Length: 602
Image 1 (tube, rainbow, N blue to C red):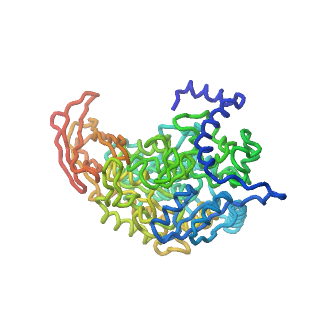
Image 2 (cartoon, rainbow, N blue to C red):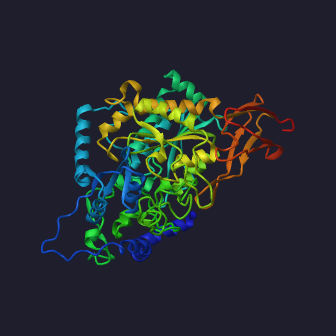
Image 3 (cartoon, rainbow, N blue to C red):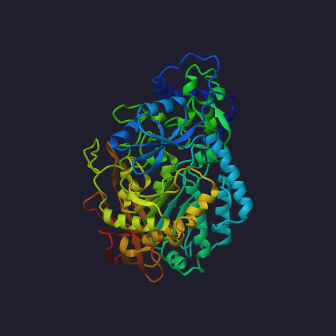
């Protein structure tokens, strides 16, 4: 990201007449127009123009893997599965509808008009708020939060629970200049580097998936209020730190949440007001940006001026710009189920405008680099990344075991598949979802939990919240969190999160070092390593620090030194006193292992 002085210059440039923005937009349009040029030309204008096309959510039955590939080859906005052998697709245009129909697959319209559905949802939320006054959620909320609401709620939580909660800003601002905030909840939360493991919960990688952030924030509130009152929560928070990032994709969510109404890009686009570059019938027409999926990357490798993310609305097919953050992580990046920059017939994707565009490189985006930094600087022994929808608990890997990368590496099954399946099944007992490996739905490589597992051995899961909508009426968000009307006796997602937290805290599920050293000494474990991408590798240097307490003895919870995709790897343990390195040692730690180390020279 640019320095403060260069960012000031960027803001100044963004206020200048739209010459620079037009140039950036034109650059972004090159691959867009290249793709759309392949589409059939518009039919001759009819005497009466067709009625505006209502974007819709459609279920497509895909009995075979080949059928899934045929749908993906169209470059459509494939959302999530709605059951086995069924995909949900957001159809934005008549052209997309015709292309889907041409496949000859059975389709069912789930939501016939997403624009109208937005209005219906708003009415339902207002009616729910009037009916209940306070919901069963820990916060009592009755409506979706905005980005500002999340910031206020995190700050208020830290203010009201100062000994248990702190907020902090992640290192990298977004492309549009927003800060990304996290909240940490733990007993004695300000006791730094005390050797406890971390449980990480993430929301809103995809902008339109609003419930994913709501559940993340509600869990933070439940934990903060439960410490000292709820025996189980108190025990867990004394053993593990919980870091929650409700909104990973702050730019995209802010657009999705706050924009509304019907946006006809033919009217708004200053570069092509008549629709001559992009045929009118293939023009993207969306309910504002409510169903935006990706982040605000307008041009690869270029940080555009702050505040210009909404320029997507003035770009032909601008809805499709951006990077799919959940294809941008560094394990199996650019593999099957993601899209490269240029369209590919053999890889079944539409290039940069594809909803699954994986970005220019692994971790090309500030949002994913923020998550990478968290995972590699803490002992993250468990992770849940929330998404919508599908009523699923997914675990690694996101590509079929038989796949072989361009670098000649076979994907295979996760080394800890049996243990991960047992935990996934237990979590699904609480929320009533289906527990399965991600690839059993379709390929989608470059995901958060795949990378976290490959880089550190952390058990990571995706919760796909809800049955058939990205952001349904808020009452359904409440039901999935509490389990009311679904799996009430089993506790819903609130109980599933606590079981995942308990697993992250369990010493037998990760590794421990029992260290004796000088009180106040600074300990660092480091492993210089990388994770495999589809055609190479991505750096994954693990560096975690702790401080020896007054007793001179530290029990340090860590990830295994040998990662799941490797044969045998050590940590390098360093002990420093007053900035001077006193001793180094190589340490091997298997899962569940406990090793005693006496650093006599430190």
